[in-house]
Length: 230
Ligand SMILES: Nc1ncnc2c1ncn2[C@@H]1O[C@H](COP(=O)(O)OP(=O)(O)OP(=O)(O)O)[C@@H](O)[C@H]1O
Ligand SMILES: [Mg+2]
Image: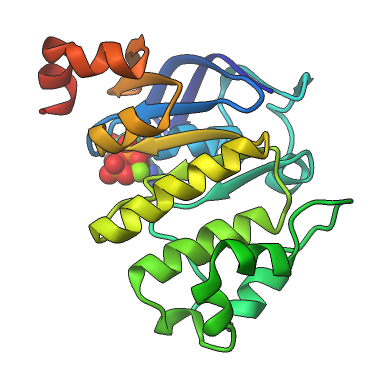
């Protein structure tokens, strides 16, 4: 599905990603954990083409995508749920969903998104900026699904959410996984990531410094305290 080999990404002269490699298989949920400023969003930007890596290889669905533009990569089936939701504030809930719609046979539709998130249907004519943080996160996920992705990149989806919504995001990830979608889940919430993923990479200063099963990370106090402060 996704294969990343030794990518290096810069902002100007700042060398941020320093040789990141990872794989995401079909139907897998892979976690990336790391503290503030360690390069997690930069990794997502590198994959979707906003800040393409200067070296290394990104392969998606068997195709090298390093030189492709974000809209071309999106068309191949990659979608981002961005950090901070990035809802279109002056569009209604329904417009937020419809504006990115890309239909496929028996894929996601407005109706299916509303079935997944009934509160969004109740608020379909609300402007995006009138929603609570939790509702905005549901909308951000729903909007991504409207592009009918095969790989979802989620950038800190639980950031700033009340426990009830964190739980909801967890349920949604599990439901999506059952549909066969692949997910790269970027997080700072260790317990959430341990519960939701099949495999976890820990990121520190633009490098992956530990990779293991969720259970192994849970038991590895040295790595947890050194790189995650927990
Ligand atoms: N547009 C930019 N121009 C220059 N430097 C940037 C830019 N965006 C991020 N950086 C720097 O790159 C490094 C990695 O940032 P990044 O946003 O990828 O971290 P992050 O792991 O997503 O952090 P957070 O958990 O706070 O979202 C940081 O040192 C940050 O200051
Ligand atoms: Mg970030």
